[in-house]
Image 1 (cartoon, one colour):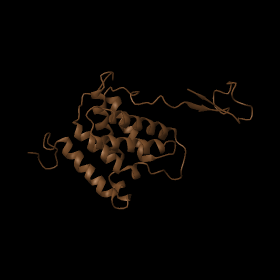
Image 2 (cartoon, helix red, strand yellow):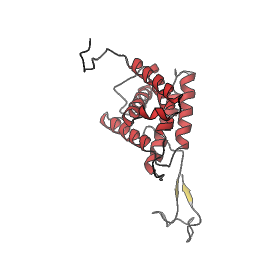
Image 3 (cartoon, helix red, strand yellow):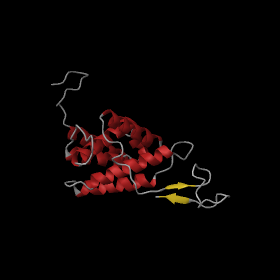
Image 4 (tube, helix red, strand yellow):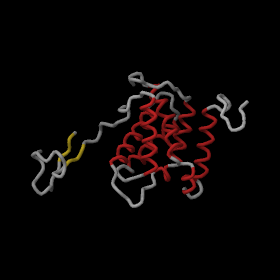
Length: 202
C-alpha cells in the first residue's frame, strides 16, 4: 500500500492512469473544447508523447539507442486518444500570432512519430485512425507559433536526450527547404535580383 503523499510503485498500472486521463480529456472535449486546456499542460502532453514514442522505438529494431522502457500497447493507445482529444488546446495559437520555426519542427516530428505508431503491427484500427487523424491536424498547424505544442515538444526532446535516444528518428525527409534571396543561398542561379523567384532544395 502507498503512504499518504507518496506514489507507491505498482499501485497503479500505466494503462489505468492513461485510460483515466484519456477519458477525462474526451469528457472535457465534449463540452466546448476549452475545458481541455486544464488538462493540456505541456508536461502532461510531453508524457503522452513519451509513452507513444517509447513503444515505437521499442518496436523498431534499427533505432540506435532504443529505449529502456516498453509501455504496453493499450497505454500507448490511450495516450494517442488523449492527445487527439486535447488538440484544440495543444494547437492553440499564441498571441499575437507569429511565424515559428520551432512550431514547424515540433509539428513535423510529432506528426511523423504518430504515423510511425499507426504503422506498427498490432496497433488497433481505432488507434490507427486516431493517430492518423491527429497527425494530419498537427501537420496542418505547422509554421504558426503554438506555445503548448512547442513547450511539450521541447520537454519530450529533453527526455529523449537524457535517455540517449536517437533524436533524428522522427524527422521527416519529405519536405524540401524553400529559400530566396534574403537567405544565405543567394548565390543560387534560380534566384532573381528582385527575389521574385525561389527554388526548393530537396
